[in-house]
Length: 336
Image 1 (tube, rainbow, N blue to C red):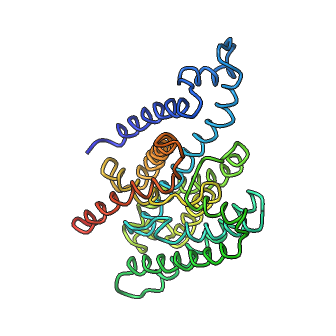
Image 2 (image 1 turned 45 degrees about the vertical axis):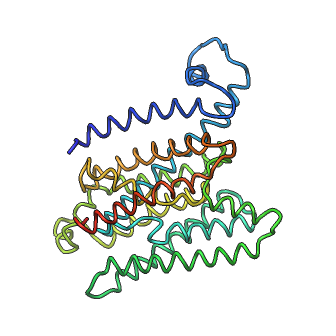
Image 3 (image 1 turned 180 degrees about the horizontal axis):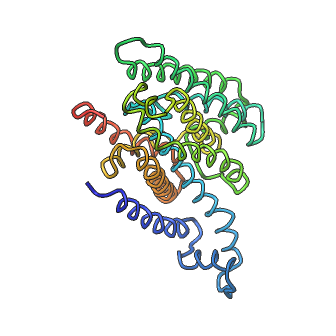
């Protein structure tokens, strides 16, 4: 097994390369060296040799999009790793537990009612938390048998319920303006994210991540069972609630600005786990790093694969589906 430290260094190096590459990719030709010089000129006295439009491209278009890709990818992956650890369930993720569907319905309501970004985030968080609470409650009510399977089935049911509600919402939307906005947003995209939206989404994502980060070492105690965790001084129900709130806050904020970006929170932690082991202390930060780089590279691919930009949510589903099937077969043979 490759050490977690080596994996972190490799991920950091990949992040730096992907960042420089992403600055250079776009409709307007701009090499990475020039783009980095434009950024450095804000910090050091560098005489500009680039056209004035280069600064607008870097600071108004590419940097906000790169920041959004890194932030959303890291948040979804970290929340997926947190859900899998806290529920001791390899299939737990924002998608499977119905959190993404609940947050989508909340954000859809905000778009339909023409709310501002902050109100849309609040609505997405409230309904995402409601979905997570319903799924968790269903798993807790199961006495005997496979509570993990019960929770997955409950998540599928709750996700279908919110998806149906969102479909009804689309029927009530104005077909000329609001309906296309909701439909395109559901596909998942980072194309229209600007500095203002990124600034509004970053605080709840960072707060949720900070909560999960601060409690990540306690998650390992849950693998021993609630009674053993209590003997170690860990209140298991309270810990689960805090982790679910933090992970749901991250997921809801991501959904409110980027739409549905599926399978990232499910697949990335499984890709990282062979390199760092099951310990949440290493799994959560490495999942966040890998998820940010992964979504940034997928976004670069979506911008360059054709003349028409493909929604990033469609690409992550296409890439993640076969990986998910492979992981499912591996888990079925070897266990979590």
